[in-house]
Length: 269
Ligand SMILES: NC(=O)c1ccc[n+]([C@@H]2O[C@H](COP(=O)([O-])OP(=O)(O)OC[C@H]3O[C@@H](n4cnc5c(N)ncnc54)[C@H](O)[C@@H]3O)[C@@H](O)[C@H]2O)c1
Image (tube, rainbow, N blue to C red):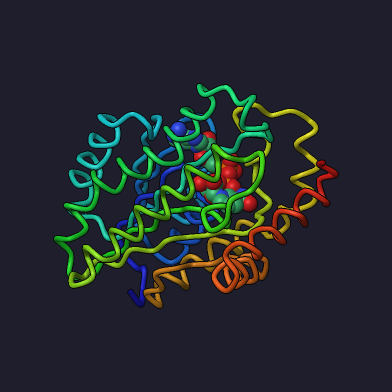
């Protein structure tokens, strides 16, 4: 897809971070937007920021893990704009570091609900509309932690591996259609992901300052370039490229090195 002018773009989790940056960048490129977040006030703020670019915006505040709400959103977006060109399933949450044997499974399920089921429902609700277009893009946000496993981050990593797995299947299934599936793997982006994590504590700020350094605008630019170039795998930042290379070349050793470095920087045992 060479040009985003007048394209209809759906973005979940558009109230902050990468989602908001994508909304701003797509609006600047002349796209029409259908935006979601489960925090109505954050979504409103994004829409107010978009007013300056005179973008046409449909907003719906709901939890992406609500299956029915996701299908209603798809219906509302088609009703408003007539068709959909691009869907970015971006909404996601973090969870702090817990040894697996102590992890409350309710937390695990909550992370899966948003990070995996939200993406699954978004994919299932919108793909029937996307495949009606001569050219379309489904952009599902995983993580570098959907490429390698990290100790004490089982819920987040498992949810992001699940998104990665879904993306791999969809890539094969829709290969002969106009729909391109993009699996997005950001490295550390300086967003509100730490403060918005399910169990935020000040101690999590160490992780944030050590690892989350790239700007959300940069992430949005890389994602949009990836859509233009029809790249199935979109890696964001040099750390993501390095990690991807390391774990593909040396699956076990690469993972060990990445883990050791993370645990060292976090002063974890
Ligand atoms: N920031 C990073 O370094 C990083 C790295 C890898 C992957 N990611 C992924 O990028 C995506 C965007 O995260 P971000 O860094 O911009 O974080 P963020 O917290 O700044 O933005 C996420 C947005 O999603 C919304 N959201 C969360 N749960 C939701 C739900 N159930 N329903 C609807 N909206 C919901 C939040 O309210 C928030 O506005 C997430 O999927 C995240 O896992 C981020």
